[in-house]
Length: 472
Figure 1 (cartoon, rainbow, N blue to C red):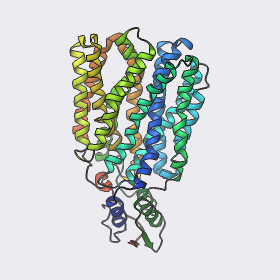
Figure 2: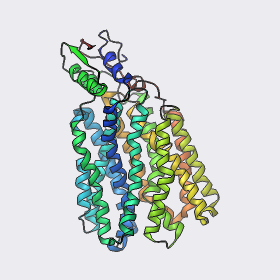
Figure 3: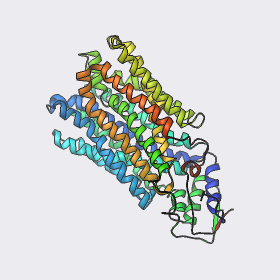
Figure 4: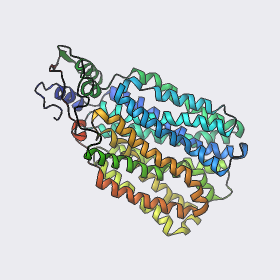
């Protein structure tokens, strides 16, 4: 039955307080704690493109080894997303939150001390598992703590921190290279720096309480739920008598229900299509810029990449955050895919554009803007909203895994695509990918804007507890 329809009205009262609470410091505490992880994820995933450009002559990397180093963390993140997504449904959100960042720290620091291809390859696997775990956990935790009117904005802000990580990578690399730090040392510093912001949030993540929705819908613990609601909203909530025990686990709909299979196809499929474009461009940006500028220096191309991110990508994230709860996730997603298709398709149809670097960079940059003010934001937000609590973590993990599978394939194949098809041909493929994203969004995904999390996810709740929380 829908949440709040049971005779005790307990779930309705508790969730109502959470859904209707004004934005406050605890909401932003949760967002900051989650968002710093995404700053780190973006930095660690994308800095490898610059690192491998430095290491190619040092490690004598073949094209295959270069592609593997650029992409292996993305493949490993598939494992991390599935593993942590499932674990958070079984053991709870709080029980595992922070362990994914610990893995990322270990992998980033170890990467900086490697001396050959194989060692770096293995360390990047550890980094990827941690990143994948962060994708699966942070969106769900933020969503389950959010109020109804600002849920898209809050979850979107977590992901928008990725933009700063994307910008920090080329800026930090430019600083090191521009100040004369030897290349043999610079790449180690670049990799080790990825551990710094991750270390800063492990403690904060361990201090977050179990989410009210997991405490109530899965554990049936009204006392813990009331405590978490009070922590979040600042409003006193008392439960008399205190009731603990098993809640609704297994009583709601199944992840294999047709409606949720269709939604999974939509969330995982759209995320995969988006990441083919995003990571194919992002991780391979040095290769794309090298093809555009020929013999320009690594520092030159790194600065150009930073400018593209700063001018086009970063604003796109925040426009999406601003409009997420105004025009909806679905519209932002399909129109973003559509504009990507237009930009990529134009370069494909008029290949002479690549001979005019300024024009190419403007069009290329606009595709980045509509990736961010488009599916890169919404594919992160969607899975945290449209699946029930009992399997929200795993569904989010499956969706993120779909995305990172696309990212891995793109990062692995993009260097070869640019080499053999040229820039126009490579971007022509991405145009087709974007068109598929429009179609899949329109067919498979509902609009959760303005709905409670329980309404958007078709949540069923049948608690054993019969006590009614009373506002004090």
